[in-house]
Image (tube, rainbow over all chains, first blue to last red; front, side, top):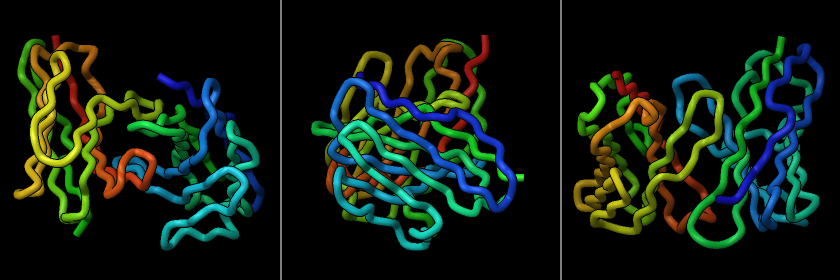
Length: 114
Length: 112
């Protein structure tokens, strides 16, 4: 299957700082990338959908000014959590899609905000 | 009410047992049904993909979809310790390149 990487795998930051998470499709070009958030013992919740070269579409209740998404190329999307607070601590997972049946998921980034 | 309901477990079974995992859903527009396996601190990986109602078998795994009851199942035969993971059901109205709605996941442990 296709490979999707995320960087960093884990990040700890102070409250009020911004954190950038990268999602890369390593062996295919992703027309669409998705960002999910997963709280402990809860399901993955879609935050936003991004298509290369266009603005991301955010799910209801997700603040677009807080979670900045940039899909600059067919292999890279970034999620920036601005002015992070402890309630933003979570597991952030991206997925990438080109065509066919499935989205390919990255390994996730665990964000801890102190 | 959540769109997708899944018993979080944990579910513990002996090696070799048949495992049954289930999800129910409320959105009748869901047409595509998936099962993902997620190991601790890893991203989900696709196990089974089914369109509309019916059964699909792949090795030790069988996926069933009953749209009339809004109920899907995953069966694992001859379960192995390596099957120990969290299993998530996911659904979509319009296929894999669109929004997926996930269940909470069922944590499975297969014991020697």
